[in-house]
Image 1: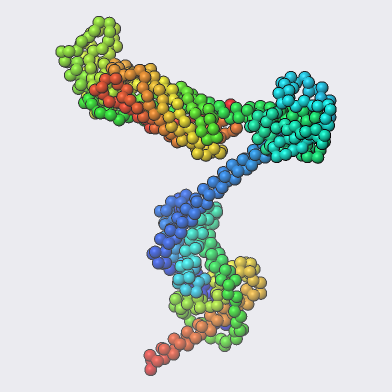
Image 2: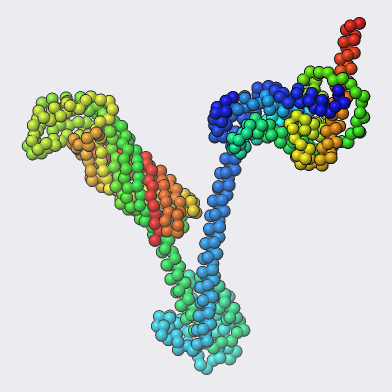
Length: 187
Length: 440
C-alpha cells in the first residue's frame, strides 16, 4: 500500500470512518494473525488476540505519529496484547517448572514445513513460547523481555535455552519420523 | 548443524517471521461490533460524567448558596443578639425614641407594677408573670405579637436565645420583660423587612425574546389558490411575576406576524381583471376581489393615476405559476396572559407555559413576494382576536440576574380572524422563542 494512501486510511480511521477501518483490517489482518499465531497456543486463541489487538490498534491510532513503519507499530501493539494476555493468565496459573533439557548429539539440520514449525512453537510451554517468539521472531533483547514479562534477564535467557532445546528435540523427532517413513516407502 | 543455536533461530525466524494467515471472515464483524459498543459506552460515560458534573455543580452551588444564606442568618442572629445584649445593658430610656415600638409595647399592656416583685414563668406558650404574694397575671405572647410572628419567633435562633435567657427560674424586673418584648417586636420587623426585600428580589423579571415561527391555518379551505405556510420573525418583551415557588405569571407586549403564501393567482387576477365587474374607484383604491381561505383579497391600485390598462398589464405580467409568489400577511400585537410552571429550577431550568392572548391586528397586507410591493389587503379581518399558546422552555442561568431561554412554542387562534361567517380561518404557528431574562 502506498504511503499516502495508507496515511489517508489511517487518518480516516482516526476519525472513526468504518470503511477506512475495514480497509486497514483487510490490509494488515493476515500479517497480524501470523504474529498472533506465534504467541498463541491455538488458532482460536490467536484470533482472540487479534480481536483484542485490533480494537487496541483502532482505539490508539491517534498515538501513531506517522514516523517509522506503521506495520511495525501494529506488531508492537499486537505483541503487547499477547503479553497482557500472558500476564493475566500467569497470575491465575503460575508457571510450571521444567527439568533441564539435556543436550543431544549433533545432527544435520533439514527443512521442516511451516505448519509443523508453527505447531512446535505453539506447543511450547507458554513462557518459553513467549520468550522464544519475542527474542527470535520479534527481535526483543533479553532486558526488554525481562521487563515486559516481569522476569529477570537470567530467567529470560534460561527460558530461551529451554525453548530451543525443546524445539531441537522436536525437530529431531520429526526428522527421524520422516526418515523412518521414507525408509518404509523404499522397502 | 543443530548444535548451533543461531541455526535453530534462523530456521524458525525465516519460516515464521513473515507468517501471514487469513483470519476467519466473521472476525471483522466482531471487532467492528466491539468498537461500536465501546464507542457507545464511551458516549454514555461522557454523558453520564457531564450530567454528574452538572449535578455536582448544581449541588455544590445549592449547598454553597444555602450555607451562604445560613451564614447570613447566623450573622444576622448574632448581630441581633449582640444588639440585644447592648440594649439589655442600657437603660430603658434609650428605647423611648422608637415611637412605634413603644406604641406596640403599650398595646401589649405590659406595664410594670411597682408593688409586686414579678417573676417570669414559662408555661407552654404562655409567659406567666406573678409572685408568691399576689395572684398571677397571664400575658400571652399574642398580646404582644400576632400569631404568625410568634411562629416565626419560635423557629428562630434568636427566640431560642431569648427563651433560654428567660428560663423558668430566672428572675427579672418587669421593665426588662417589656424591654424584651419591644426588642422582639423590633427584631421580627427587621426580619420581615429582610424577608420581604429578599422575596421581592426574586419576584420580578423581564424577558426579551425573539421568535421565529412557521404559521399555517386550520379551517375551511376556499379559493383556487395554492396556499402555503409562512415563516416569520417576531419578538417582544414579557414581564414575569413569580407568584409561588414554581408558578409564575407572565404578560407583556409581543409583535408577531403570520399568514400564508399564495400561488397560482395570476390566472385569477387576469380573469378578475378582465371581468366586467372590475371597478376602478376614483381616488380610492380597490379593484377586484380574490378569494383565499383567510378572506377575500381586495387588490389595490398603487398608482395614483387609475389607468385600467396599466393595471391590467401589470397583473398579466405576473407569470402563471404553482410556486408561491404572493404573501398574505397579518401583523398583530399580542398581549399574553401566561401561566408558567417550573419543572426544574436549577442552573438549567425547565418549565412549561400555557395561556391565552389578546391579539390586536396592526397589519393586513397582501404583497408580491419578490418585489414586496403591496397588492392589496384581506377584507373582513377582525381588529381583536384571541389565541392560546403552549410552550416548553429551557433556561440556562448565566448569573444570578441573567439567564438565557429557549422555548419551542405552539400558538393557535381560538376564533376565525375573519368576521365574515363564510371564512373559518384559524391560524396557528409553531415556533421557537429565544431570549434573555433579567431578574430584578
